[in-house]
Amino acid sequence: MIYAINHPLRPVTHPRQHCPAGQAGQYYQYRKLQAPADAAEADLNSLITLKRSIDMSVQELIEMGIADSR
Image 1 (cartoon, rainbow, N blue to C red):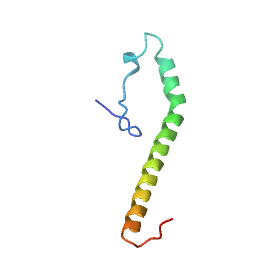
Image 2 (image 1 turned 90 degrees about the horizontal axis):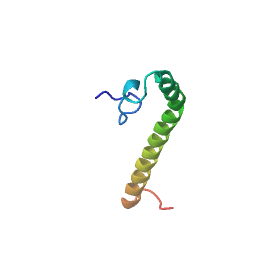
Image 3 (image 1 turned 90 degrees about the vertical axis):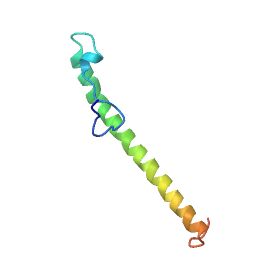
Image 4 (image 1 turned 135 degrees about the vertical axis):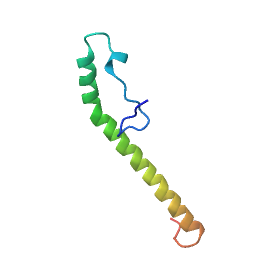
């Protein structure tokens, strides 16, 4: 199975697997319209992961007595 570069968990498939005959153009148009939303979702997930990592680091510093608790 081939995976998209910017969507590691979403497999890339051919439109014939999803569309009746003659509707492949609509499939590609949909994918083109969906691409910005998919990219924004990937960015949001990256930021959420980054925030979680920073929060864990701050908590570790607090437990070691290095940072002030807020």
